[in-house]
Length: 139
Image (cartoon, helix red, strand yellow):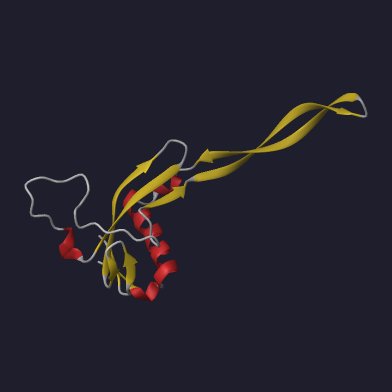
């Protein structure tokens, strides 16, 4: 799966049209950070390697400052909890209930979607914001 951008974009190798954008890999940490590595190529044919080995960095991979090299998404919920603490009120120790918030990882999205469905959904949102949904083609 990939997304073709039917509009000129700037890359480290100049302006290209019909860029081929795909997700290469992902990492999800236990604290709720999802990172998707983005690959950009001139076209689908540029993704094919005729080598006897796979290099660590694809030789035809491009970069775009607008798109970036990764998509970072926080998968956390803000959870409210209450705690009784002692405060001085008019120099008298008084117990007061206060509300606090903490961030808690929330990976429940993966109960209904695969990691790549979620990743491509977010990548499509990013590219639509940059280039317009009408200029994107899912291939």
